[in-house]
Length: 509
Ligand SMILES: Cc1cc2nc3c(=O)[nH]c(=O)nc-3n(C[C@H](O)[C@H](O)[C@H](O)COP(=O)(O)OP(=O)(O)OC[C@H]3O[C@@H](n4cnc5c(N)ncnc54)[C@H](O)[C@@H]3O)c2cc1C
Image 1 (cartoon, rainbow, N blue to C red):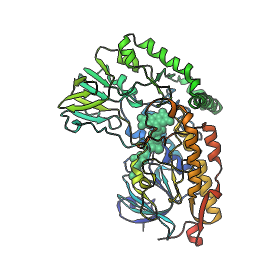
Image 2 (image 1 turned 120 degrees about the horizontal axis):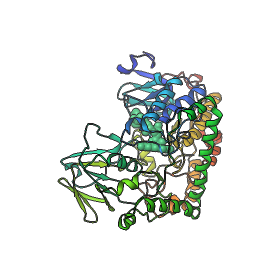
Image 3 (image 1 turned 180 degrees about the horizontal axis):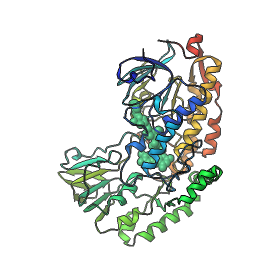
Image 4 (image 1 turned 30 degrees about the horizontal axis):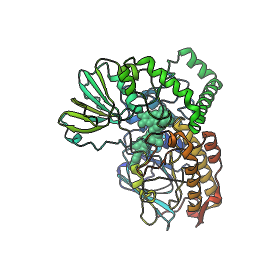
């Protein structure tokens, strides 16, 4: 049997036993692999269905794509990048950063590209995850799902959309081969991606019709070019970049206080109102763009160019959901319509109904999705009862709405590394979170959520799952998240110990 690291392994249908298998090679998968190796686990494989790493930052190549958390914070704390050329880096730089970091930490050779997980099932007999992929078969002692909540495009169920005679594509699968010059374009959705690509395409298209179901709070983006001298300083003086990161973290945490005490958000909301007023003179358009809910209830957006783009003569804002598409006409629920030749979907992702949950099964063959019944939950957003030795990265109830995904991920990875270390030293073959511990955590979260802006802000957002329950948000500070996840708590788990071979990961099925 070829070792999984061998170049021939990916093209032969073989069985490999590894200590840890990570699904996905986005920022979570790469970060997890680094954390595991630091915890002493070297037998790690990442399986990635695409042909390159980077996840979101590989897939989202739409014009204007960039992060909306400052780059000094939207990066691993242990791998600061002094070379960011903007305060909020664009997609090409973020993608390059992930590639460089994976290479620098020796992770790239561990990735099996073009390998999609079809089914992963826990087998108590050999205390292993049995993972079927489009290529090889793996058994693994630990399974880490890093498949990404913002991965699978959400295509709205609009009658007639499938029969639209022109081009239709989702913002995360941008059709660069489709020339938008002079085109009549309908954009459906006005969330984080649309706010970035609308101003980028507006000067090029003939007409742009924005169908906006809900107006968004958009604040000014404190973005700027980072001069060469500043980059040199960051390179020479890593403490300066750490200080910048800490300052940005503190600023976002301060905003987070408002998210937990919405009455404090009035001043921030005023900034949003003034931002809109300064950019949009037309009272009708301004009314259409004024949100009717509290800022922070949906993901906060930052842009200096979105509102000005919407005032241009070739743009029409339809403050309505799309009801149907008839031929080449996109029709809003308010009766308005537009004849177009291109439809761009800025309609988001399957976040709380992520497809990977339908592919991961407990020992009895019930999927994670069946366990969750539409409302995902996990102990500390990370472990799920019935799914031993498995960890969900960027899992349920860890979303913050204002902070960096890296902050959440690194908090989780401290916990995962602790769990793996403890498991190895205690000789456990399996660790399964106690259902009552998971239920108690879930109850604690659900009790804290109602007073947060996510639940009380008067909006409908992607934080709410198909049952109308907020399964996304962490109702406290990220400081508290880091503290809660800093120490692995073995007493929260039912454990088994088997043969020494099983326990040290040498067992073979
Ligand atoms: C456009 C955009 C901008 C964002 N900007 C920010 C921001 O500014 N700040 C912030 O905090 N967050 C942001 N996010 C959210 C989040 O930080 C990113 O989505 C981030 O990339 C998540 O990393 P990930 O590794 O968990 O998932 P992903 O980056 O989605 O990576 C998941 C990987 O898993 C692979 N995969 C999925 N299923 C399988 C399978 N069955 N088998 C094998 N491989 C599989 C995918 O191909 C992918 O490579 C943004 C999201 C989007 C979409």
